[in-house]
Length: 124
Image (cartoon, rainbow, N blue to C red; front, side, top):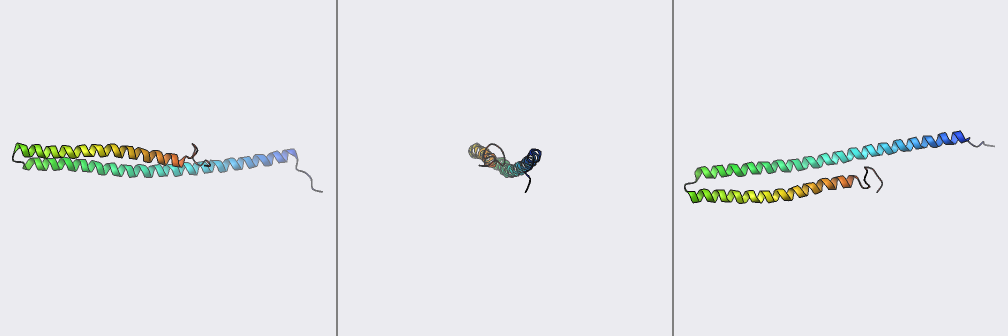
C-alpha cells in the first residue's frame, strides 16, 4: 500500500510550486516590460524623425525668404514676400499643434496597449 506524503513533504512541494510560479510571473513581467520599452523607443524615434523634418522645413522657409528679399526691387515686393512667409509660418504653427496632439496620443496609446491592466504582462 502506498504511503501518503507527510505534511512537510506536501508543504515543501507547494512551496516549490509557488517559487516556480513566482519565477515564471517575474520572467513574464520582465519580457513584457522590455517589449513595452522597445515599442516606446520605436515610437519616440518615429516622432523624432518627423520633428527633424519639420525643423528642416522651417529652415527652408526662412532661407527662401532671404533669397526672395535679396532680389526684391520695391517695398511692395518685399512686403509681399514677407507676408507670404508669415502666412506659411502660421500654417506650420497650426500643423505643429496638430502634430503635438497626435504624437502625445500615439505615446499614450503605446503605453496603454502595453499595459492592459495597469501592469505589463497582466492578463486582459
